[in-house]
Image 1 (tube, rainbow, N blue to C red):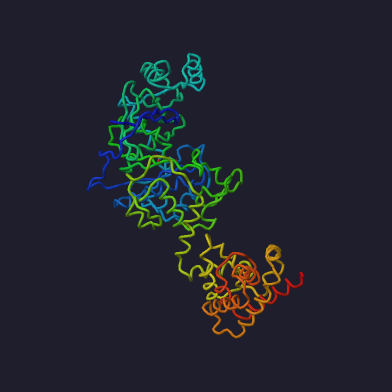
Image 2 (cartoon, rainbow, N blue to C red):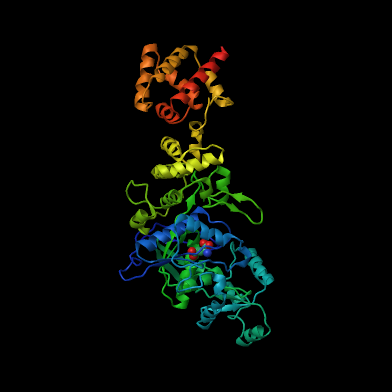
Length: 542
Ligand code: GLU
């Protein structure tokens, strides 16, 4: 049987062999009540990888009629960043991934913030000591450093406090019971470490990766309880998952090296452990390494859900929300970063995703992030919005730039403009549909374009078109198009010769909706005025 072997030390993962898909031990039983959690640490803004973890947890819970919990893991006070917890809440709210139980909503297994659970971890560390699965260690930082230096000098590449080295350190395994008692009585500082078995094979089936097998010699005696009276991440995480009755731990690949240690902690307690599913990394667009916080600003796309202002550096990192993305588009894109429904379907609402999602279809290879595809998703969602909604958003944006428009007119314009828009803001390109007078006035770019394209022989065609327009009724695209074509025929000109000039005269730009639609929206008088102004300008150059 092929297996994934993880060398679980200091975040190093080495895959030595193949893997086995679809472990059967963790299939969901009919009567199993699924409970999953998203457990972020409030150390900064939520990276989109974090949102994807929350999303997969949410989808899995919904699909199986279970609960999705949110737990704030803030035991490491030194890494706490003010505002990060609020940010997490706001991000999940924006994405529509509202947890069933959380610090803000409460629930049967609360509190859901580890700093509010501080008091309960010590008894579990004590329980492991009583079971001889953990021990007190009194080593000072200097002693630890000396140990490392000694081992390094002896040629050990990654010195660790483990089943071998603990024999030579100051801990309750090497000191007499009386001495341990005395040290406690003196109030000497200590930590509690896990007593990792010396010769054991740690194995578990990961839903995404298959069998993971690690020899315990590769796992060090991790600190479970710190001298400051706080549990470490590892202890708090396991105790809480157990007390909160978590059935499936779905989290990022960066936690895979910790999983064997977690399995050992469950075994030490004698608790049934949840199933594990470690999600693939999100890679940079070129596939070269993990997408980092800095990539966004470097490559010009957001990596966070919302804008974030670093409270210390005052630096701003941009978010999808403020860039004008729809949360539905953001979520849809994230769902497909590591998973697919097995068909070509790409556009899926949260409800559809819930029906289709399956952890066993999550792939283990890294998922390349594609900023262009992300924009494509937004474009698709924008096109699906009701015209009236886009109209009123366009109306508001126009107003902010000093242009008044009726809702009716803004809606008609939005219908035309949405085809080329990725964001609502892009529709402001069509501001010329709402202003009066020639769009060439004070428009250097348009003037330059026109100078390149203008040929005096186009003038008679434009003049003839102006004449036709005078008697045209109704002033609709179906009438405008044949009128234009007749003029071309009459003057022996091609569309490509006249249309760009028509477009620059009336719209002042080379891109945009069809000119017959644009003209109908502007109305006869305005179109004629702009065509004449354009002709006057070009003639003034002669
Ligand atoms: N607090 C950890 C984090 O910040 C949670 C890891 C886990 O889900 O177990 O990602």
